[in-house]
Image 1 (tube, rainbow, N blue to C red):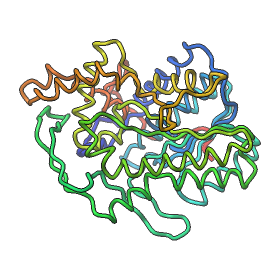
Image 2 (image 1 turned 60 degrees about the horizontal axis):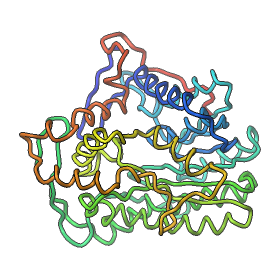
Image 3 (image 1 turned 90 degrees about the horizontal axis):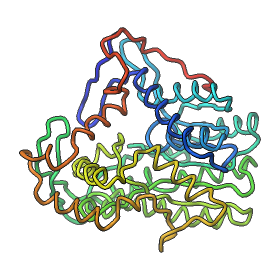
Length: 396
C-alpha cells in the first residue's frame, strides 16, 4: 500500500515503516560515532519505543554495548491500518541490535499491569539474570491501577485559574490565543496517578522482590521544568503536580537502593518535539522559537544527543553525578541558559501569524513531528508500495 500521513490534531494516525527505520538508523549511527560509554550491562527501558525512551535504549545498546529489554504498548499493522510508529521503531531497533550482536528483547503490553511486570521479570531472570539500569520513560494518557482496578485519565490543565497565552496550529502556522480552564481536584488526583511515581516504585519493588535488580543498580525517570512561559500549563499545572510526585518517588527510591550501592535520579531534559509535547498547548510554539534560538547559538540537541550526554557526562562518568539544589540531573542546562531564554522571551512577545515563519523555526517543528511517524525522512520513496506488516524480532 501507499502510506501517507493522516493527521488528527496533534496525532498522526499512520506511520511509515521504512521512514521509522531510517530515523532509528540515524540515531544508532550517531551513537556509534561517539566515544564508547563505560556504563550499564543489562538495561530495562519501560516506555522504550519512542522519544527519550527509545533514545535511552539506543545509547545503552550502541554506546555502552548493553543488553536491553524494552517494554512498550504499541500495535502491529492490521488490514489497511498501519502499525504505530513505536512498533516500527522497535522492529528497527531489534534489527540493528542483531547486526551489532547485542542481546535485545521486546515485550508489548500495559506496563502498568502486574502481568507485564511478571512477564518482564521472567524474561530478565531467564535471559540476563539481572539488570543494572532501569529507565522509566512512560507517557500515557490513562492508567488502570493493578490493585484497585480504577482507571485514571490525565489532563493538561492549569491549577487555580484559567490560563491564556499564545499557541500555534503547527499544521497551518496560525498563531492564536488558547484559554484552558483550571483542573478540578479530582483531575489533579487522576493526573498524578497516571504520570506520577507510583508505577515506577512498583517496578523497582517487583524487580527487587524477584531478585533481578543487581546490587549497585541505577534507575532514572525523565521530567521537564521549562521556562516561565510554559509554567502555568506545565510545571505549575497538573503535569507539574505529577512530576513533583515523580521527584518524591526518586528520593524514596534513592534511599531504598542506597543500602546496596544503588541510585535513583530524575533527569530534567530539554523541550523537544515528541508525541507528548505536541499535545500541550503553548509548548509547540515555544519549541519552535527555542529551536531557532538554540540553532543560532550552536546549542541545539535532539533526543539522541540529549540521552548520549546524560549517559556519558552524568550517569556513567565514574564520579558522582552533578545535581541541582533539588537533587536533579539537569540536561536542560543549555535550554535554560539566561541568554537563550532572554532571546526566546523577546521573540515571544512579538509573535503573530504574519511573522511566525520569520521569528521561529516552525518548519523544523513540523518536519520533526512528521518524522516521529516516519514521514518527511530523506531517502524514503513515499510514493512506493510499502508493506505495513512488519514483525518485531525477539518479541516476547
